[in-house]
Length: 453
Image 1: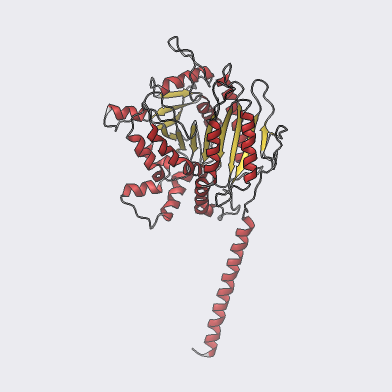
Image 2 (image 1 turned 60 degrees about the vertical axis):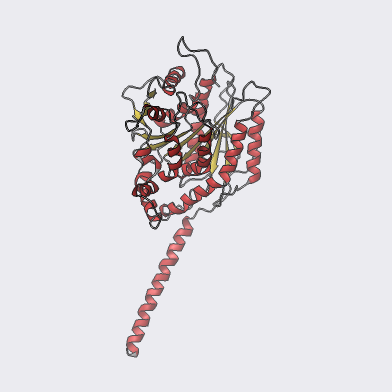
């Protein structure tokens, strides 16, 4: 090549490198412009003089605040607190977590406490204006109303509802397509938070839940743990080994609820393979009528994020993973809620809504939990057991009926998409599902009189 040709080649390469550098700088600028850095949102505690949260953005910085106005006696005001984690699963403010737990413990010395934990999902955090913060606050008010109905005239009548919002860096970038491309990183971070910091917090709340009080004939405390999307994966990662451990303590066909009174995951984003050990244990056990739910996983038919996007992401992530069978590979790619072999229930819409009076749907739940019926009608929806037609014996049929590890397919009219979990139909069902656990009031003349706690 002559000097002129070499000069032209050098210029061409130079222009290419210059343009490549400009593109790289532009990409870095876009990523940095949309990057959401980790920070602690909640550090201020004003015990006994709570800020009142009415809408998104209220009470910024408050570690524990009131939700709405005081409902009046005997029900105390609803409270909502926060625990936050960094990307390594560490508590962002350990002293704040201690302050919050101590405040709940102080309330518990005076009256029973219903603790409702929520772990948010991808693209969310604990910022004051985050949509999940406001939605969870509204949900707590519904929980409190239902719980007041359950406890009217009973030992738990003054039970205090306290929500605990687990905040993590689910939102790490606000600019597309980088926001969507955070899928793999945020999934890993959610599992890391569940493995480390969340386990510590949930263990402390479980201990508080189990406290026996000399001043009360029963504790009356309750612990409900919930999670959505990657937050569902966070919760399951934190609790799955404890759930498996508890299967070893089955007694008279019933597994104790040591982890919590109920764990509820909605549109959770974790693979079916993570559920294999628990499902295998449960399928070999015989559960008795009256076994209360321990884990309930609800996934919408319309959840395209876990139905389509999740398998695509998992297919890439597991490209070079070893699988002993094709079915194992399928389990490792599909989200738990869309893996049909593990499905135990459906949640469907009713053509004619049923009663929403607490006693009516409470008695209907009692009949459902003891096996009188395989469908629980409540309001506009019904929870129905999936027929166990493949069971090999009457013993296994009974086990399937009372399996406390529920994988529920939700009709798309009830939850219309991945993030549409706060709609009236599903949230109404969910707070009633929470409130009715352990319902033990008189429903027929033959029933013994008992207390609902």
